[in-house]
Length: 393
Image (cartoon, rainbow, N blue to C red):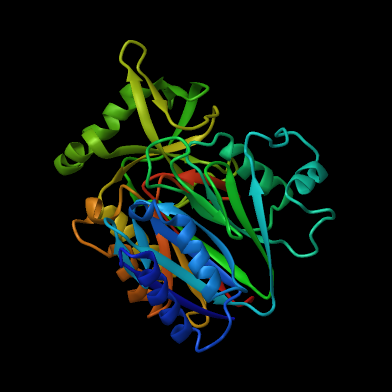
């Protein structure tokens, strides 16, 4: 296993591909790349097919998977505006790569038998080894939650990560790339088995404010009572003991964390699924959130800002004990991070290299990030999801 990362900001697609190919060949030291993960900024929207054809001429044995993006990450540089193409290339002689395209309007029901899901994913028999999955999807295509639930159901021991394409605010305006084909909807998946491991780091970029509490009454995605008090009354009491600075931040940066493990009475940092506060009903004192709720579920309010996001990613990278050699890194970061959040460029990429060294880092800024919290895979917002592709333990 050997990885290389490259990025080009050339506006001309031929020059960009030549620069990418040269850097990849140097990084792989002449080894043949079996996998090309690529991200193309929307500034190249007239040249998507041309870029793939040119890459195919340079690397005819490389399986391509990728998407369009508003901002592109490569070789630890984050290019948030203008033309850019980035590639992570992997020389993977003992890894089986299975490309999968799915029209998400044609998925099995959530209660379908495992073999139905396997067949839809192109597996005739149960997998002998749990595959790891890279997923890229169109943000306007429905049923992503059903897809992630199906993958978790059929492959509970597999890691899944990825992101939603960006670059266009119009339906069918974004592009997905798989095996030299271009799609304007659905999802593309890469199944990886053999001598490959995958660690996924999910940095939701929040810090808790106030104590954990219990939902004592709710309906669908509306919290009616927390700790037997109207939800808004409980929130007001919690904010009343917060610092003045946190009270100011809470006006625009307040979120809610949902504990997903009913058997864990004391969920720790990173074990809450962060979701938006959608609205409040001042008449009833209820709070509407962007997630499914259950009575008895533990919740905790969170704040998100640049400092909290930095500290969260820094803590997760500090605690990561995986290898730092022969690894490839794919970073999927929210459009709301980057320079908008940190007021400086390359923040997450620089922090990753500070902890893991000069390893290949490639990725994009997404309309949503895919990664696990607890035992389930979710779509996140304002998050950075880092996939570490490594030799098996």
